[in-house]
Image 1 (cartoon, rainbow, N blue to C red):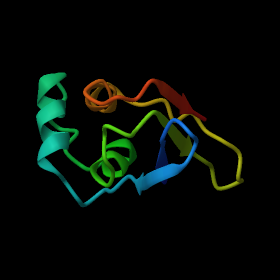
Image 2 (cartoon, rainbow, N blue to C red; image 1 turned 30 degrees about the vertical axis):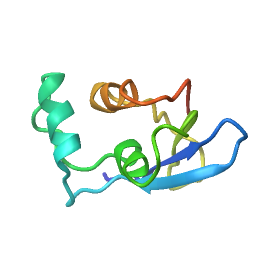
Image 3 (cartoon, helix red, strand yellow; image 1 turned 45 degrees about the horizontal axis):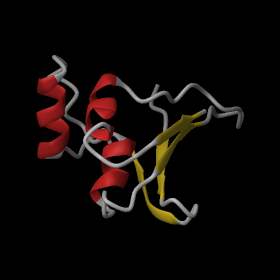
Length: 99
């Protein structure tokens, strides 16, 4: 089953900088690079966190929120995977939140 995972990047003042969703068809060199780096080379499809970060100025990013909801509307665990944590660690993000 495919779930939609969304990520939202905010600055220090709480302003939304960008958002992104996971993709089961798109890839990106940054995603592939960090997937290889953490030993998960098969995770090349674009994750929500990476998609959102690619759309904003990382120097202004302070907080990222990652969400996932079931078909019943209830929140599901959306903790960033090892690949996404690796990418997040290269940014200025200080706060990582998830459902």
